[in-house]
View 1 (tube, rainbow, N blue to C red):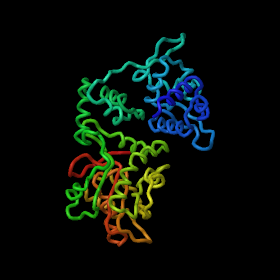
View 2 (cartoon, one colour):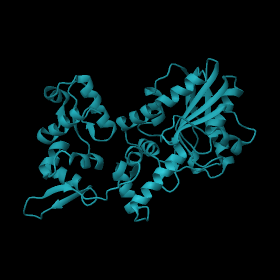
View 3 (cartoon, rainbow, N blue to C red):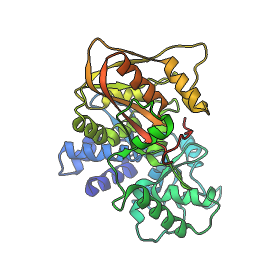
View 4 (cartoon, rainbow, N blue to C red):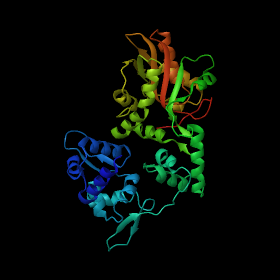
Length: 385
């Protein structure tokens, strides 16, 4: 992210409020493409948001999010309610309603009516340990009121309000050590191979050649991973294009790796059970970059829609997938890649693979999901939206 452009953006927000790209362009020597890239990165990191998504007159404002509010104090120490109204592009009365979400945890008020209230950044514990970036880049926590807190802010909030521990720095060290155990010293994995779990769950009735995840659904003690929480929010029923594009960007390299390595010539997306205004898997199928043919996979409608996550027994999950998934194709495939959002048991992917093979649609089937269980070799019931 370009720091100089970011500084211009924040100064423009504080002085002028909601802005156009042209306003940043006038104050910068960088190209519009570089400015646009920086703005998109700020959007992906929940700092900015678009007020309208089409045309040349797109305007941007500070996101009504704890991370964004916390960050803007780096550019101005003291804020009045008029300042927040300006950066959010709302009325003063509306700004007063919004700021209540952040007071105490992230913002402190100085003064009492009738004098003018000044808002400053709330003091918080400073975490000093061996690898602070492991938390800043990878941790996220969704508060009970629906705020997605990322990095150190989220970790401190969780530690203070949910962990039951007071030794935050020790807890931070434990988090870093746990990530190293699951992700290695570089804290990154392109693909998590969960193929061995299939035989432990399904015995000889395994129809997937390989099963991969981009990330774990949750880590012991520390709960849902950042990517898992993005999926949860994306499936909550509200349309959030920027967030879903963020998910697509995070899984693109992993999906491409599977497609290239295993010569995938057909791809299929597991359809959702619950009707929502915006379906995450449909969105991924539209924005993920691939050149394979797409299989038609659909859900057979029943009197009552039963989600896999609601079934406690593996036998019930297998039966559910067998009875509700339908695969149709006018062409034959050699290697098929099935993509789903979350894997608990793998029953849906395995049964879909069986139908593809039994119907002679494909010879080999591979599975890839955004997140999967961190429990080695066992069937896991994953709770998500």
